[in-house]
Image (tube, rainbow, N blue to C red; front, side, top):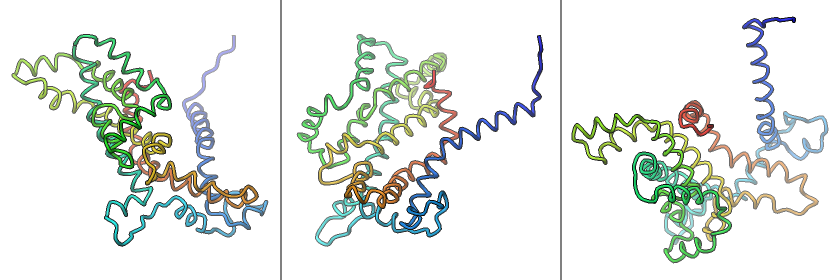
Length: 300
């Protein structure tokens, strides 16, 4: 039988080529979006123009900015909050960031209880917890919307933030399970030593267990931030007088059918504006996020 061994250099070259191919496959849609966002009408109808526009323009970005209502309208006679909520970017930020921070802490408490404590009907409650993110929100949106209306949370980020503060919110059950899975891996000797030294359960959690959960915190925060940022269904129900970027981006597509080709650069520009904040966050956190995914066991 013929055997041969590849040298380390050859293996490295093959690995780099594979990574390059996958990088091109993943980056091609983003690069196409960026290219088309700056193309003028003459570049669209010119078959020789592929990636680099001959006559780059910012008109598509300006049109998308106006249609998506990113810049707030400061009108006289209205309060500061009312003026700021005319910006879809502001509404998205005050919805996604506080809700993600709230889930980061609240879901950790629930995950610690499920992962480290013993209490009656624990298994049943874990099943119910799983059902909270297995059941689609479309099936329960009527009672949830009615409840938010009774509490006065409609047209307010509180509709997303308050459930997050209570350890639930958007996909909160999944975040509790992520924390639960992480806390189970921490040696019980750490808690026992702290309890022997006179620490109470609150001190054990806040001073010992929770600081060790940084990998899980990063995963939960980024997942929660992205899912709240991309949410369209619940945002469209809770918000009628204000809009988020995710819901307003559809307005850019409203155009007569015969003008679809001319509108494509504006559609791509709106998509570019929508994903840019998340891309910036990921660029600065991707190393921590990758390490955290491995340590929390999400990929298991």
